[in-house]
Length: 310
Image (cartoon, rainbow, N blue to C red):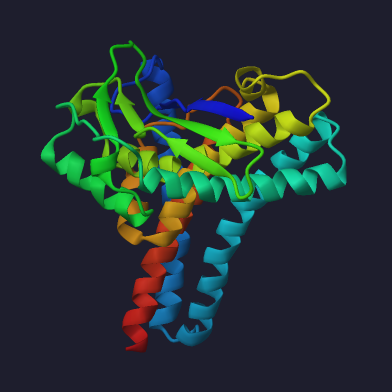
C-alpha cells in the first residue's frame, strides 16, 4: 500500500511588513523589547566588570557558559516532547504503539531527508530573490545538507505574507526499510524581494531540513495508530498539532541561534522589531525574545572569555 503525503507549512511574520498589526501594537512591542535588552545588558555589563576586576574566574565562567547553551537547547526540546506526549494522550495511543510511532517517525524522517537530497527532475528558480538573498539561502540550506539547485523557488500569487515550503512524499508503508520518492521541494515566497529578511531565509532552511520531514512522519504514524478517523489534513489542523507547529517555529529560531553567533544576531535583530505571530496561541512573545537576546549575550560573553584565555 502506498501513501501520499503533501505537507505545506506556512511561515508568517518573516517579512518587513506589519502583517496586519496595528502600529501602536508594534510600537508597544518594540518598546518592551528595548526594556528587556536594557535589563539583560545591565547584567552583562556587571559580568564584564567583575571579569575585568578578576572577581570571577574565566575558566569557571566558561564552563558555566557552556551549561547555559545546553540549558536553552534542552528547554525548547523539552517543550516539544511535552506536546508530543499530549498528542499521544489525545489519540489514546498506548505505550507500545507510541514507541512504534516514534521509531517509525525517526526512520521516515531520515528517509525523507535522504530523498530531499536526491529529488527527480530539475529545480526552477523564479526571479524573486536578490543575489545576496539567494546566497544566504544557499548557505543555510547547505548547512543542513540541502542543495539549493534541487529546490524550486517560486513567487506565490496569494495575498498572504508567508513562506510556504512544500514537498510531496510517496510512502510505501509495507516496505522495510521505508521507501520514499519525492518531488523537488518548493519554497513559495508570497512577498516582494524587499520584504524578505535574512532571518526569514535562515528559518526556511531550518524548517525544510528539520521540521517538514518530522511532521510528515508523525502525521502518518499517528494516523496508523490513532483510534480517531483522521486524514492528514484534519489531523494537522488539531490543537495539538498547531502547538507542535508553534514549537517548531521556536526551534527554528533558538537552535540556529545556539549554533552560530552571526545567525543569532540576525534573528534577534529581526525579532526585536517584529513580534512572534506565527500562529494563534503562540507562547509569550516577550519570553521568546528574552531567550533569543539572552543567547546573543551568551555569545558575547563567550568571545570575551575566549580572548582572556588566549
